Length: 220
Image (tube, rainbow, N blue to C red; front, side, top):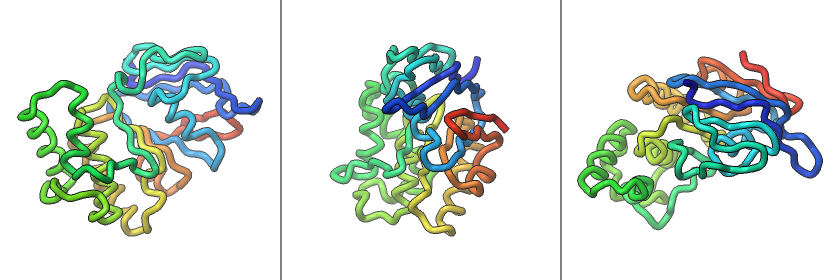
């Protein structure tokens, strides 16, 4: 059973096909990049996987379950067991690092002790355990990025979806975070879907790439 699958998915905006007849499978534990120029539909695909958009036609499956099809969302984002890292990170500025991660766990109904253990483990993995009481504005760009990754992973999702997460960072920091992300994947074995327009990130992050061009995809 695949972790993620699209079957003949279409999505249009204003009469223009952004995604056209797109099909692919991503197996559990794979690192897959979705690559293409601006406007090629990369973020649209990710938003359909996450549950923020429904395909106009076609089927989206997560863990073998049909979660959206033919214009309807059957399973919302909060029930898809997916972690998401947005381009703008979307950290809560009024919450500490610990509280940002705890927010992601409270919906699961976990006890305070279990939440504390989970958060401590994931903060240690991203080397931010000493910053648990710090607010995002007091962190560097790279540290904020690691908080966003930790928040996405703390709920132990089936897959981690990342939308151009390094686009606003300098080259040295990009290299550092790419390496750290690959280390986390090696340790935890989650499925990774990583959207990027950068060929360098595509080569570093993915063991397979889906190239989007003219609203269609080719797996390489």
